Image 1 (cartoon, rainbow, N blue to C red):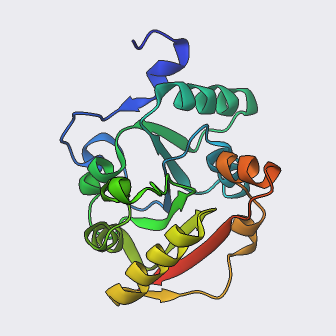
Image 2 (tube, one colour):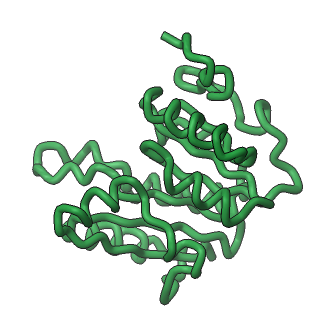
Length: 198
């Protein structure tokens, strides 16, 4: 139920079949998407470092988005737009060549063989990510799961749509997602990949 004060700042797109530019002014803006943002500390810190950019922070869990919105309101951060929506649905709503950077950080790797069909990153989805990125736009991925890391690396490299980048820009390397912080506390290594759209 949407009954919290911060809910009025969260765009509910689940079940909606609009284009993102029907809801937001996208033209002339530098836009980043944190897809599956969790509680959104990565989105918040990115917005602080890049105040001239519009940051979309998307997740399906309303409680996580409420925490993100409360944190940003307390800090006076005005360039983050929380979106409640499923990842594949949101990407389908984004017009071609809209995003400067897209982040998918520590998604569920669905490690069991019988669950792998639930993985977000497939060849088809990578094609959709390429469609929404501007030429030269960055796709930033991270995971603590070595098998998923290799699978995603193969899928993206095999697509021919992206050029692998040697390292993260300084403003990204300095920020960790909530999930990365959790895995690091447990002694797990989170590895990052960055590609530029051809």
